[in-house]
Length: 370
Image: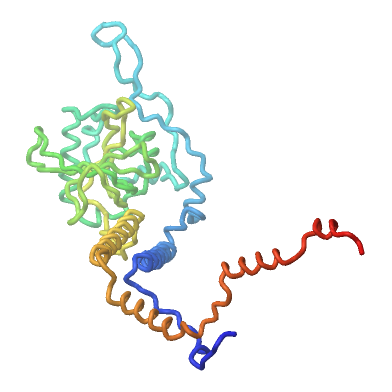
């Protein structure tokens, strides 16, 4: 029969967690990492750009442009085998396009013939007649180029206003080159390249100019613009991505070398770029920054655990020793009140003695009946 005391009725209190143990440190590390991951995901989820791929927004103008059939444009320099002027059969020369000009409006209103006739020429008509399309810069182009340059440099803001420059796009300039040559137009799009060009050997007084590659609605067909100036703080280089517009004078279809061969692009000359520096926006955490942050957090946690393990591997901490000593004292105080009962050995011995006292069935059958 077990003995009981008033102290034995007290509930056994669970010892507090040992936060210096490796198991507890790993558990805390996982909890902190999970909380940090949830915070990062919340920040990413609050950014509308994260979900833009699910339902991309399109304004009405872009939706209308998507429904406009766009005729394909081949910007390669057209060539054909002919008998050249010097009598060499089979030589190649640039062939002019004999097809009638086709308006290419991309959903915008094309200026009528009367409106185009009202546009002012920024160079002498005879000089512009010497300009040749589908060719690089030629000496014959210099006179018209110089006249446009001087006119732009001395023009007033009213003369360069957008009201006096109809908005055109790549196809209009490419397919109606003779119509727009020497006239002020407005082009807009995304600048992908902006580099400085040294002064021309034919006209060193012009000074440095800026060669700008503008893409308006296409990533393959550029508009090349030579600008006298660029705004302050405008990014410069071969990898630029800036939305801008120009009031520029169309000059010719200029030849340049590309990966697909010799290509042509509308060439214009402008005085400056219509551009506004982007406003400083709130920084959005990128995926790379998330990976770096998680990696740094894990590295710091590993260093902390290694430091604690190194300091505690030779012996128990004071907290562990205190907990172990308190548990031992509580066990010794209540050891006499614990009823352990009969041991397994004693139970086996009693069972064996009981089996020996019980008569077996064989012995009962051998006895003679009385």
